[in-house]
Image 1 (cartoon, rainbow, N blue to C red):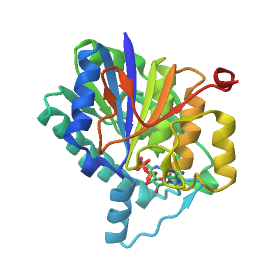
Image 2: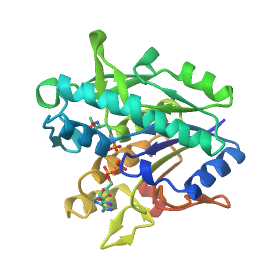
Image 3: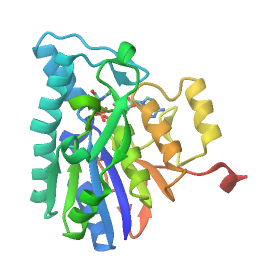
Image 4: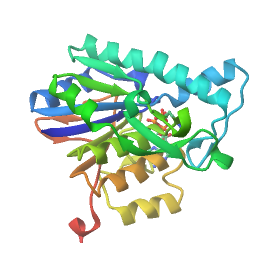
Length: 255
Ligand SMILES: Nc1ncnc2c1ncn2[C@@H]1O[C@H](COP(=O)(O)OP(=O)(O)O)[C@@H](O)[C@H]1O
Ligand SMILES: CC(=O)N[C@@H](CCC(=O)OP(=O)(O)O)C(=O)O
């Protein structure tokens, strides 16, 4: 079973194009099984603003108090997950929304409770449930809210959640869908990146903000995934068996 984990950022959820869904349909037609993980960062920001709750990010991760966690869960599970499943269904794709803390679909541990609050790093993935759903011909759509220790739930960066799902499922492909064409340098798409080149772009400040957890996840995913891409959700990303965006390659492949 060829599996692709697709991560869709909150930045682009409202702007997903028909051509994006056509690419999804082409992938399914080519025999790929797809697991979707979504974010919702901008929508969580808007909700927190409405609630007059301040939140800050440290290295791309949202510092998450109990109040922030409640808002994040409400937005991710109650709003973003619902929207995405309905959009997929409207484009003829049989999808099912999953709250990832249920049945430990994603289980996580605190990264650093004192520093980040209720923020987790995924420690295990319930493959049995995901594989059952895939075998039934459905596309699972996962929230980045994980089961934590002692009855807690933890907020997981959606890029990290997707990377963990890709590794656990031994996915062939990790696709990170965002609001730009891929990694840009001076406004130009960088079509191929190795880990060394990526690190240089982070050091020089070309890659910043929300792109940092994305490229870090991409590089880590290369340990188990054959193909890793960052692509735009506003355009087709897969046409005639070819992928667009920025492709990440292992170092030795380019030397
Ligand atoms: N070198 C870069 N190339 C492209 N985007 C970058 C780069 N550096 C920073 N970014 C920013 O990263 C954003 C994508 O990250 P983010 O907003 O967290 O998206 P998502 O919600 O999809 O995870 C882009 O819209 C852009 O503003
Ligand atoms: C810990 C942490 O940062 N969690 C993220 C989860 C959502 C997310 O990652 O959404 P995007 O993919 O749209 O950025 C947050 O609270 O914003």
